[in-house]
Image (cartoon, rainbow, N blue to C red; front, top):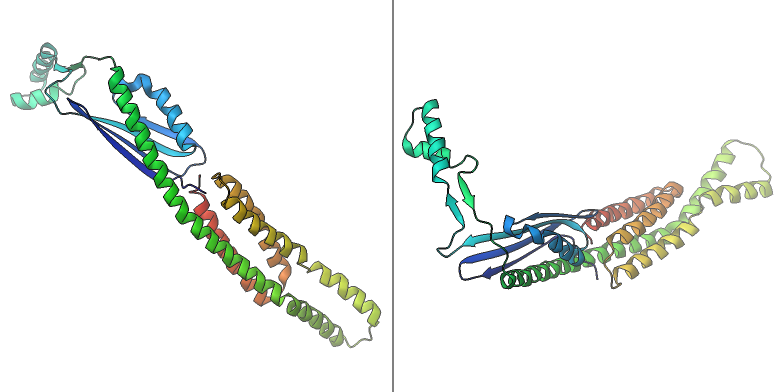
Amino acid sequence: MIHSMTGYGKSVLQLPTKKISIEIKSLNSKNLDVNARMPSVYREKELSLRKLIANKLERGKIDFSIYVEITGEETTTQVNKTVVKQYMNQLRDVVAGDETELLKMAVRFPDALSTERDDIDDDEWNAILNEVNTALNHISTYRLDEGKVLEADFKERIQRIDDLLEQVIAIDPERIDGVRERLRKGVEELKEKVDENRFEQELIFYIEKFDITEEKVRLKNHLEYFIKSLNSKDSNGKKLGFITQEIGREINTIGSKSNYAPMQKLVVQMKDELEKIKEQLLNVL
């Protein structure tokens, strides 16, 4: 069962004096890239959170956020009155202005506000960690659901390629007869007598250069291997990507050897389906 790298998870923890919201968003990426945003009081826990996210989500561009909203009367932020007054006095020497406007400017300067750093309460952190796991479970479910949609699309497109391959196989004898006929007409236009045995030998050699038997067999095997890998327990987008490279190689070879317009049209359709698979594979974990 494949998983998408696109997902979203959220969980909210309501404490007596604050509401803590945990949000996790993920997009596709070749590797794991975690961007964590959280209040400074929780920064000491960032490394352990990153490990937890890496173990759960494995790969993708991850935005992890902890938002804290104070809902009670308690606050650890204080105004440094002395510092603010000094800033306002200095501002008066620079520009004449309303006291309220000067105050607005002063509180934006460094050290105008001070925050007492609290130690993390163990019970609070355990509650937060529980909500982080809840959010991770939500995003994993989201990724799984997205993966099911991708899987259905892949199977449909692989089946289309397989159907087109069957059409290629069906018209291949017609193509070879066409090649044989064109060669014979070309010889006749030379108005020269040709040794039939020698002609047949040369014809066999020429036709062998356009033979696609091996490519048809290998392409069939690659399509079956793609579906088998798709149905495996692990979600491995990189492996599926390697298989599509092999599928593309066989399709391209068939196209270069076909020398027959109806077959080349089928090859173009196969390429179109394969490109759509490759685009979607970028989202697979």
